[in-house]
Length: 123
Image 1 (spheres, rainbow, N blue to C red):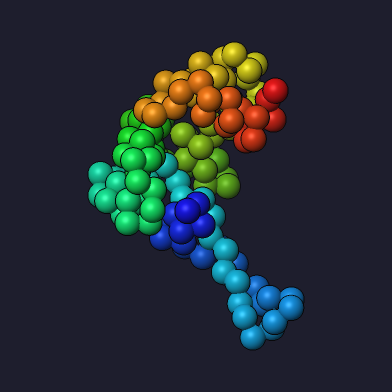
Image 2: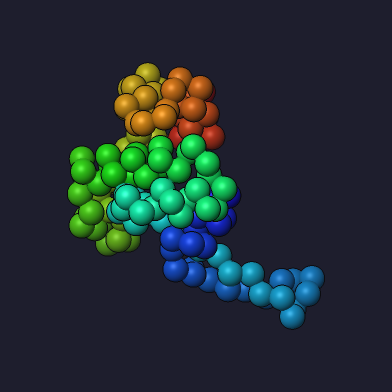
C-alpha cells in the first residue's frame, strides 16, 4: 500500500537495474509531502489504492499538518515545515511526542506507540 501511495503521489527518485535480472528496472519514489496528500481528492484515490477507511485519516492528517505549519520549504533539502516539525518529535521525550501524535485524526494510543517505536526510535 505504501509503495502504491509513493508511486501515485510522488515523482520517481531513482531507477536501477535489478542485479539478478538486468532486463528489469526498479523505480523508487520518495514518500509524498503533506501538501501533496492534503487535497480533498486524495481520499478517493487512496481508497482506490486499497487504503479503505484509512484514506480519510491520511488526507485529514496531512491537511492538519499543512494548516498548522504551512507548505513553503524552509530548508535547503526542500522539506516542508510540517516535515521539519515531524522530525523534531524524534528529539522530544516519548510522552511529549505521543501527546502530539494523539492529536491526529484516527491516531489512538496503539498507533501512536507503533509510530514512536518504528519511526522515532522511542521505547
